[in-house]
Length: 370
Ligand SMILES: [Fe+2]
Image (cartoon, rainbow, N blue to C red; front, top):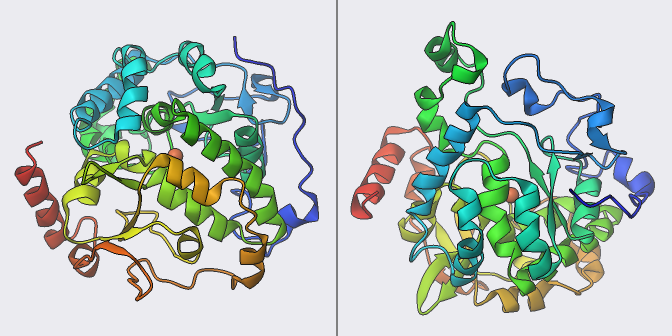
C-alpha cells in the first residue's frame, strides 16, 4: 500500500495566485473537476474526488492497465533499454539495474518500485493523473515523494491516425503501432517518462537529496516570482542534464533518457551547444519545450550538482534577476565554459519535421546504429 499523505499542503499565500507568477499552476481546477489526460484512455474511464487522497492530487491507486497499454510500455522499454549502455551515466545504470526486473513486463506497480526505492533513499513514487500544480509538486518533492503520471503516451483516440487504425475494435484490442512515431516523442510527462526516466536516479543518495532540496526551494521561488527561472534549473538538470564521466559525455536527465532520438541528439549531434552548468547562468536561460534542446548543460558529477544548488539560498539572485529570461536558447557567452560549441544547424533549418532536420536525425541514427 502507498503511504498515507501525512503532512499538510503548505499555504502558498497570495503569491501563488498572483497573475504575475509565471507558470503558476496549469489552468486545471483540481482533483475531481479537471479535464484529465485520462480522456485518452478507453472511453468511460473517469476520476472522481474519492479517487484522490484529500487535495494532494495523489491518486489512491494506479489504474488497471489494458493489455494494449502494457504493450506500449514494453515497446518503449525495449527500445530505450538498448540505448542506455555507454550513454546513460553510471549512477543511472546502477539504479536501473536494481529496478529493471520490474520494468520489463509492462507498466510496473508503484508499490513494487517503492519496496526497492524507499529502503534505498527514502523516496516513494506516488500516482498522479498528469501534470500537477507547481506548489503541490514542490510539496511532494519536499516530502520525498515523486509524483508520477499514471497514463501512458500514444493512442489518443481523437487523432485521425489512431481512430482509423482502431475503428470497430473493443478497448482491450486497441492497438497503437500506428502511432509508433508519436510514441518516441515525449509530448508531456507520462508514466514511462516518470518511471523509466526519473526513478533510477532517485536511487542515488546525492540526487535524491538534490530533488528534495529543489522541492524545498520552490516556495521561495514562488514568493519572489521567479518560478520560471527556478524551473529552468530543473529543466536543464533533472530533465535534460548531461554529465562528464571518464572523459565522455553521458546522460542523467530523464527527459533525454526517455527519448531515444534525444539521447542521440544530445550526445552526438554537432548542432546543440554543451556548456558547463552554473545555476545563475541556467536560471537566465530560456528553454525549448516542443523539440530537442539547443543547449545542454554539463555537470562534473551528481555530487557537484548537489553542492552547487542544494541548500543554497537563491534569494540574492532572485532579487537581481529580471523577470523572464535574459539568454536565448542558442546563446553562448564569453563567460561560459563551453564543452562543445554547436552549429545550431538543427534549429536554423526549422527543427522537428523539417526535411533537413529529418535528415540530420537519420544520419545520427545511422552513425550510431539504432
Ligand atoms: Fe520529468
